[in-house]
Amino acid sequence: MVSDKKIIAVLGATGAQGGGLLRSILADKDGPFKARALTRDVNSAKAKALAAAGAEVMAADVDDAATLRRGFEGVHGAYCVTFFWDHMSPEKELAEAGSMAEAAKQTGVQHVIWSTLEDTRRLVPLEDDRMPTLGGKYKVPHFDAKGEADALFTRAGVPATFLLTSFYWDNFIYFGAGPKRGPDGKLALVLPMGDKKLPGMAAEDIGKCAHGIFKRGREFIGKTVGITGEHLSGEEMAAGLTRALGEQVTYQGVSPEVYRSFPFPGADDLGNMFQFKRDFNDHFRGARSVDFSRSLNPELQSFDQWLSRNADKIPLEAAAG
Ligand SMILES: NC(=O)c1ccc[n+]([C@@H]2O[C@H](COP(=O)([O-])OP(=O)(O)OC[C@H]3O[C@@H](n4cnc5c(N)ncnc54)[C@H](OP(=O)(O)O)[C@@H]3O)[C@@H](O)[C@H]2O)c1
Image: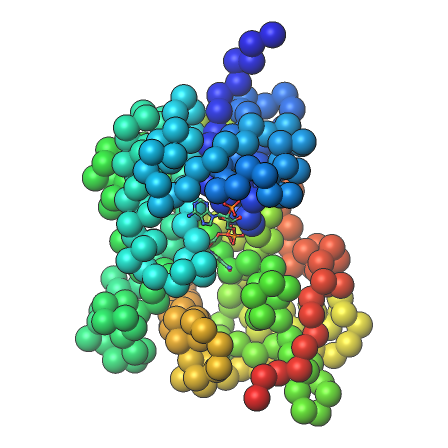
């Protein structure tokens, strides 16, 4: 029997955002879509698992325009995400977003979701010295290039929804952002957020929300929408971690200057990012609604729900230095 389901091509399908979308489409057996997973290696264990679960798996590299075009050929929708932390180059990220926009235009994709973030330079111009300029022309490189790339989709005339995502709580597991054990043996969650609230979410929920956007048809084309699971202060996250880990976690607010000086790659970018979220907290939070996110994805997880499934995976390492 020939399926009349529309195809959604998913970049980053073996990763966090795209993987969530893939799994959400595959789980929606009676839904209107089928999933095409795009990966650089169709033979990887993750790609094979997606094929076994029922996805079409196709080779594509965002740095190879011909493969990208093939990946978008014949699809209704495309989920476009870039991979900043693989290369840490905003210029490369911008070029990759441009290639995605171009491929979507050439293949006539009817709905692109571009996983974007704010161009912080609109609120913190380069001459504003409350935070350092990085790489000569950015304040928060991994935000700014994504925000700048919005115009590439618009200019190409691609029907796009601009999806503002939130801090993944999964960063506490995979990105070294979780609580650290100090010299006193006690656990501290170190963030430069002052007493402001940080919108956060389960990475898995990003794809589920994107699925909800595709299902709503043309409603969000040309619009910017923001998603989040919960807005929580450092104290509130530390309290949640304390309950879930069964061990006291204390929130340790530090200044963005101190955070920027931490000895890991990208600490300056992340220090600026948290400062932006802290100093423009109303603006940043106002762009991300929990209720809206739940309307797209009724299974949206709270922090406590995410912790109940994931707290045992958080590595409780000693703080560096
Ligand atoms: N961490 C956060 O809190 C957070 C919050 C908001 C936004 N973001 C943004 O999320 C983005 C990353 O998304 P993610 O977390 O879903 O990524 P991820 O889990 O690291 O997965 C990345 C996937 O992308 C694929 N990939 C990498 N380079 C590729 C290329 N050249 N061509 C095609 N596919 C490629 C890889 O698949 P294959 O190996 O199978 O090809 C990989 O599985 C970053 O730009 C980051 O700034 C992160």
